[in-house]
Amino acid sequence: MTIPSYLRSVTVALVAGCGNAEAPALGTPTSDTLAGGIVRVRNDVPMGWRNGSAAWQVTEELRISGDEGTESEIINPQSLALDASGRVWVADQSPARLKLYGRDGRLVRVVAREGEGPGEFRVGFIVPAGTYLVLHDPQQSRTSVFDSAGTFLRSFPSQCCYHMAIGADPEGGVLIAGMAAGEERRGQAWYRYSLEGKLLDTTFVPRLTEDKFWTVGDPKRMMMNLAIPFTPRIEAVSHPAGGFLLGHSGTYQLARIRQAGDTALLFGRSWTPQPVTDQDRRDIIERMIPTFDQFDEATLRRAFHAEDIPAVRPAFSSLWVDQEGYSWVLRDSVEFDVFDPAGGWLGELIISPSLSTGTAFFGRARITSSVEQSDGRPVVVVWRVDKLQR
Image (cartoon, rainbow, N blue to C red; front, side):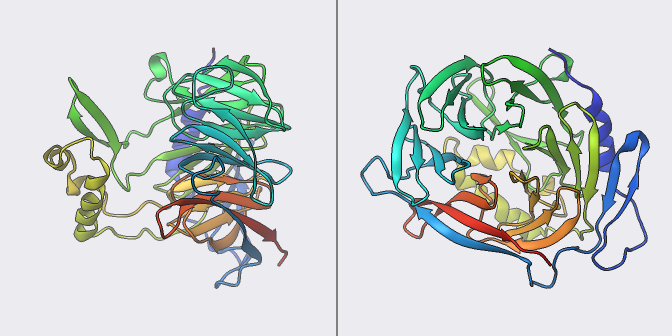
């Protein structure tokens, strides 16, 4: 197993930022070429739309909740996917079920159930891979492959522990996050498998030196590390064309990394950091405490220190790349910046309800996510994205 070292230099480039440059003409990004042929794009103003008059239209198309008390009911969606036919796949929890819904929102079939037998799973993260659907179970360190009808084909041993989205590339590779080994343990590794289960290569994504955590609990009993809110970090998501998109949330810099390991593109946009007040810090802690009921309140208050929370908010909270190569950068609960595949900033889009939970999939001209209804029940929403011209 090889672990490329190229990402270390990419991290330095991301954190260094783009520097100061003369403001470009309205709607025109500027670019230059760095050593090694890396293209760097600067965006001070959007090139696609501005002032709320978006050239793209995002329209709610479908809601799926299922019939209460039946197998069609959405209970606790862990992961979502849209296939080439526009059907919606849902990896549900409590109990674990892999469900396939048609474009009309009706349940087609329950594809897989909770368990440890062939095709069964405990925790599921899913992605379309050509005409197949791949489900990774980090709890059982196992990945399963299904055909387009939902027929189980095979499983193979993979990775444990990382409960996060997986990816697929045009060559039939499946990208799964796992623990880094040896001297690279201070970071995250992405393991690339074939659909037959062969390990093809490994990519290492290092952590930033400023990564900071709150440690909760007693290591002799129960202990948990939590990222301190608003701390800058590197986000890494798979790219549908292969490789990754990396983003540094402290500088609003993004990097497109090819599967071969070379950096193709650095891009981002100008932004003004928003302050975090002392009251904001206190409010964050008060909201967090009830969500960790496995610990008593006194233990949590000893671990959560308001002064550890940074004085400014990061540039963004989450990244996605849709199946056409457009980058979607979530800045708050409903507002996205959208970049074209060449790194040009098209503009801002507001999508409501929020996609901030991370349970979302950005397909080809469609987005699906799970949101909570007023009665507390989850619903899976599908939006149509009309990518109109200027």
